[in-house]
Length: 318
Image (cartoon, rainbow, N blue to C red; front, side, top):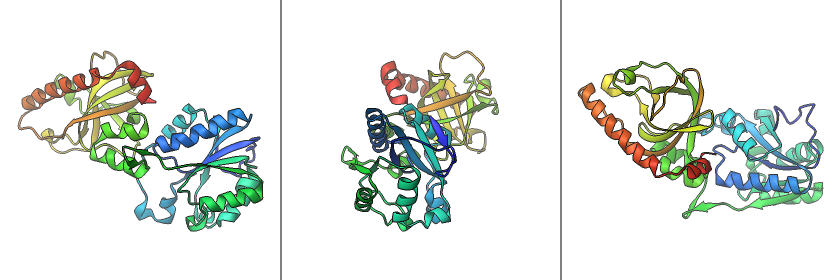
């Protein structure tokens, strides 16, 4: 997959582009529908599947106080886009100059003159151009005038609930990770690197991998049944997110105890997939009571994870 850092990049030349555009935070089922349409149509017409996305998130420029925390890191978003077979991603820097382009000027300058778009797939609730005043109807009209087609994906609902990045963000931050996979089509994950922590878990008989991540959205503090992916291999695990109140509130950490694992993970890049929240984080009056509870948590996590077959995990981990 090619990545271009600006729509005006001098090496950007993509014959017969089939395009979609947006922020794609989380890459939920609605986003995935757009991506599949773009990729399938590009293959069928010997074109290039292209995603036009924006960084930073537009609200970080237009209204920083309302800017959302992002579900995916930039690296994870790029890797997920690649997994869908996208040929190229254009990362357009979003600044005030770009934000002030009128909808018609944006379409003419970038979609028609620069990219020579053959077809663009968008969601029904599209807003583009200055003040997001451009709507789907405007894009269709401009497409007729400019010689490109517009495909429309209607809003997708699951269980009567409309899928959106904001809804997914809310569920994650509430700790409802088992609900999230209905909207993502996979388990929510954070990626990070294993670093040395306080080594308390090792002394208590539960050596843990201390994971440092750049993810902005983390599940609510508590204990979770998880899979830790190392070199594409999923290891069943139980994970604590929180401040370790039994030992005095410290910085917020992510610590995973991996079942039946022997090896050194320090320095390795991993992905942690959240399956289900077991309980809230608690302060115990003694380390021995904490160990007793940790044993119960480990059994709970093993029971939850044992109900998930390898095929199901692989299908929901992508």
